[in-house]
Amino acid sequence: MLTDSTYPKSFASDNHAGVHPTILEAMTAANHGDAPAYGGDRWTSTFEHHIKDLFGPKAEGFAVLNGAGANMVGLAPMLGRYDAIVCADTAHIATHETGAAERLLGTKLLTTPTADGKLRPQDITARLSTLGSHHEPQPRVVSVSQVTELGTCYSPEEIAALADTAHTAGLLLHMDGARLANAAAHLNTTLGAITTEVGVDIFSFGGTKNGALAAEAVIVLSPSLAHAIPFLRRQSLQLASKMRFISAQLSALLTDDLWHHNATHANQMATRLANGITDLPGITIAYPVQSNAVFATLPKAATAALLNRYLFHHWDEAAGTVRWMTAFDTTPDHVDDFLDDIRKSLVIP
Image (cartoon, rainbow, N blue to C red; front, side, top):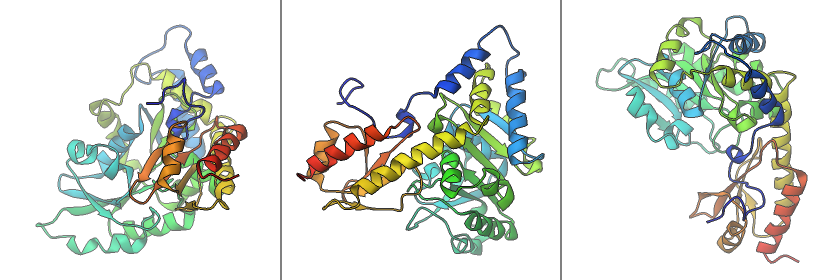
């Protein structure tokens, strides 16, 4: 097994990256003297003001500890006991959260296969025939991932169409925004343009994958849903006592567009990697590269050789598809060295 002393740069996940120096400085600055616990501190107040500035005066932000927790806290006030969530079959809540939605929320996930990780309005309407039937779980929430688990991004128009379809049917729209910053950077738009302005009701904002240590947020855009969040956050074990250190990280990300700088760089490194393999024989890119993820299909012998030096994950082992992720601290040299080894693994002169 590879250790931190035996591999050069990890391409397995942006979670493998360290903490951005500016965020470390913000945490250090918060580490002087005492401050009220559970969000009664000035750093949390600053973070909450950032949220209103970015997402509108009705937006309310709640700092939490991790992405899965942000999803559970955000989804909880949207669901009744017999309600269900419509989502893509690749959604993180359906595949990589150990059944948390089913176990903790008592809900049913109505998953839909997609070609690119993105739901379409017809995927929602196809689930509406059971509305009103007491024999069936009731569709209540549509949950989308931005960026999707396949590295693709919803355009503002696509999100607005989903929101319109959901709201017309009496459903709510939730967004898993673990890589929301990467989506906004790819789309060259603001964070609000793909959330507030297109009808999202509640979403998570990811910091950990974009240079933070352990910092996520639940952002509520529908005021009627905000009252329950403080109670649900506490009940879900997502209320940090020393919240100033989480809020300081989020505020640092949201100051001077650090979130955008980090995400743009990570995206550019993924594009550099994708461009470097485009003409290599035996390799194909499985999905459009629209964020900091590259999904590539390559010979199994090449994958095995690369795994001797690098950390990355199989995505579809049977098909030979792997996932390569870049981060805010991935450098052009990291990518170019990796590309050299990819060529060697294919026995390309």
